[in-house]
Length: 103
Image 1 (tube, rainbow, N blue to C red):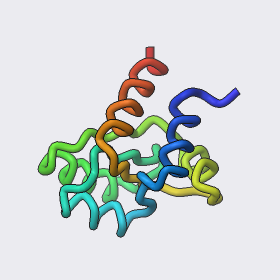
Image 2 (cartoon, helix red, strand yellow):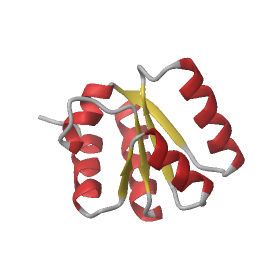
Image 3 (cartoon, rainbow, N blue to C red):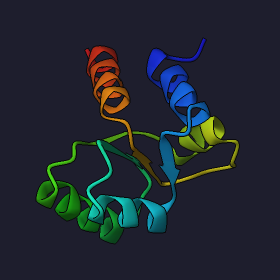
């Protein structure tokens, strides 16, 4: 069975509250429209560094606990490294679920 985080991320995708990929996520974070960034564990060091700086600057939480294949499967792709969550309530719930599953 898929974990709750992955299931809820699928719901967020279907509701249209997800931006996918490096460029879109970078654009939306600069526009202050993201409530959460999810980055794959396999993202390059430069990508991780860049998005950590953005997230700190714009006060956006970041999650790095999932593989690019896990994230891609939710979005109907083979793999994806960066996802942005637009809706604040959805972002907060994903953070909660991530914390619950980490314990």
